[in-house]
Image 1 (cartoon, rainbow, N blue to C red):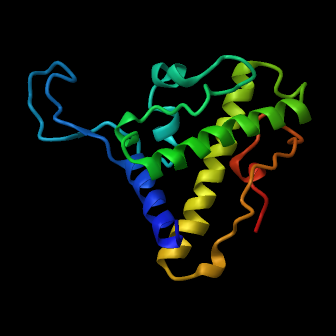
Image 2 (image 1 turned 135 degrees about the vertical axis):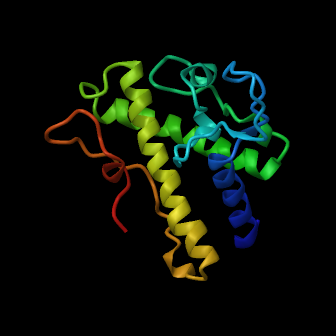
Image 3 (image 1 turned 30 degrees about the horizontal axis):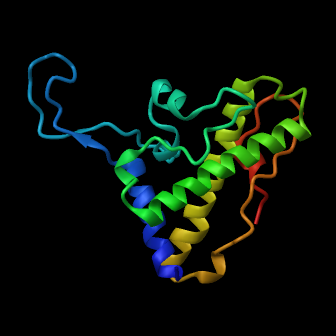
Length: 173
């Protein structure tokens, strides 16, 4: 894939982060039909991978070491698109890599499955936002020098809190 192909794949994932519509019929029980209802959040939170509810997230979790099931993701609408599926699969694998790194580096800070999952998810979202900011936005703006291929999760233990912020997961560029 050349740069323009990757930009389109990232754009497809990003678009699906914001838009997931339904007819709105019968959803809230008030009997009023609505033309379209957005079921997605307005956050760039990798809901294509993790889902929008705890029930969706549980479908792809192993509940061991904060890991996701191999190559699993929630958004089945994107499954027929091979390039997009591959991109989301990379983020799924990145989640597992981050969880293993956290467990190895900070065994007392992230001692439970839930703590590892939450922190790996937060770091992975930071990586995703970094890809959007540096790769996608830089690419469409023509600033190819802004594309940083070194975006990776590199957490450092916080001094006052057990949770890392997204900025602590991604090294400054």
